[in-house]
Amino acid sequence: MHSATRLDDLKILECFLQNSLHAHLGRIVPFRVQCLHKDETLWVLAQHPADVVIDIPDIFKVMERALQAEEPKTPLAVKLYLRSEGNQRPYSQQSFTVYPLVQKTVPGEAAPAMTGSNEDRLAWERNAQTHPADRQHDLAPGQPLQIWENQMDNTDSLPSTVPEVVTNENDRRSEQRIVKIDADVFAADIEHSFGATSEANYQTAYPAAAKPQRKLLLPILGGLGVLAIGAGAGYMGTRPCVLSVCTELTNATQLTQASIATLKNPGVTGQQILTAQKQLRQSVVDLESIPVWSGSHSAAQQSLQTLVPLVTDLDTTVGAMNQAYQATTTLNTPPVPLLKWQQSKQMWTGSIVSLAKIPTTSQVYPLARQKSIDYQSRLADVDRRIEAETTADKNLKSAVEGIKAATQSQAAAKSLTQWRGVKAEWDKVNSHLTSIPSTTTAYTQAQELLKSSQPQMTIAQDKVVEEEKATQNYQTAVKSAQLAKQAQKNNQLPQALSQWNQSVVAIQSIPQTSAMYPQAKPLVVEYTNGFQQVESKLKNIQKVALANKDLQRTCAGTPQICTYTVGNNSIVVRLMSLYTQTLKQTAMAAATQGDGNAKVGIVNHVNTLGNALQAISENAKLPLEVYGADGKQIQKYRP
Image (cartoon, rainbow, N blue to C red; front, top):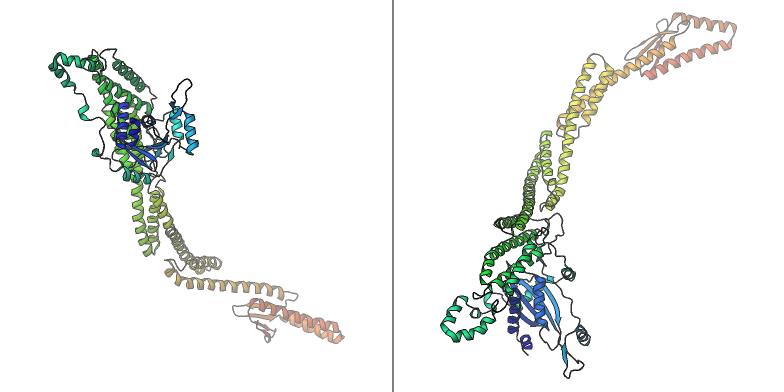
């Protein structure tokens, strides 16, 4: 059978599938088909121009029906692939199995009938233990599955704008069957198995010689005379719009009206736009098919005059939408480099420029204007992203240069002024790096630089604090020393001691790592000596005051026991004459009376006085000299 021959002869099968596509599409999309039988599987690759947008499910359906119409002897696994010109990788795939027709006896008939019902297919699957795969649409990485599938994973990137999501049940079921394939392996297989896809490697489905030549038809008929007219009558009777109602004109009108109504819908989706485009192109094909001898030819030509510009405008709009879609898919992996943002901007700009070519009188203009407004908004977003990316790149470069300069300055910094300059440089670096947004490509490197630079920034900041505090302490020490000297000069020893104390504490708190330490080091000894001198004087004064107080209490009595003098080097005590005489008289009376207790009391009194004077000498840390009323030294004590 001829169908079996097609399956057996791949060249015939290629031509058959190619003709099927052209017959379905009216040859508005020039497809080229290649076939390969490998590993018990029929591989079919269909290629179309890259600038043409096609209805993928519709193309697969046409090819599937054409192959299912064949008559294989056994179930045949089929893989269909779609590819655009200029690309090695196909961007969509569908798999299914073609089943042979099985014999089924029909009651009342002698010969068996052929059927390809689902029950028979299930029988073939059970008998052959074959598990046909569900129909799939596989994508190579980076290629769109369908033109209406344009949602992006990262909301920070620009949303897709062309076309919108198709909502009919068939498309949803198709999306649910989507799986991924190893695109690199398949691309290599396709390239190796099918070979190049140049123009010369394809068999033309419609040879140029077979195309009708309208301009030569009438002269040829006239030259042949009556015989030619008679012979051509049958041919003319088979041409559109000759012997019956002009269905082509009616269909073209209906398709045109339907597409225009679709385009006027404010909520029209991308898939609906493609359908309208297909309807308009089919209308053009139908109108052009009406021959010049048809009574509907004039009406068809008038319709074409309006329809062709409309198709052109819609093609331009769809092209702009496709370019906008490419502008969006360019940004599908954030963060996006500046070059890709610039490429996206060129595409958005190109889309807007293309839409601006649509005249205001065109019925496509409202759609084009709506898209243009949307794309201008997207372009503004891209411009902002370009500006952000450019600014981030500048900040990153400035930070890198700043790190180099700050590192060099830090290595040579000594004074507070120099360290303040280093800190200012690091602050600029920190400002540049922290201002880079996380949505930019420079963010990761900025964070790495920020992390690696943080120790140096901390050192600079700590050194500034150290030098500022050292300078402040140095100034405090010098000023306090001046005030201490002035108070000491005025014999304000407590105030002098307090100022010297502040001066010593401040000068000793200056660390050796500070730039102020060389100036502070000699002052430490000077200020410490000044403090100690005043402290010693105050202690002596306090000793003298305490000794005077204790001597006053000890020498008091009736009669007065003694007088005293407290100097810086010693304490001198002189017993009073009256006290001495009273003491002698009391002793003589006790001896005369034989009063032993009185003698003991006198001795104890004298010892108590001596012990008290020694304690005063001990506390004051001053030597003690005791003289009698006659001026003779009675006692000498050194603490």
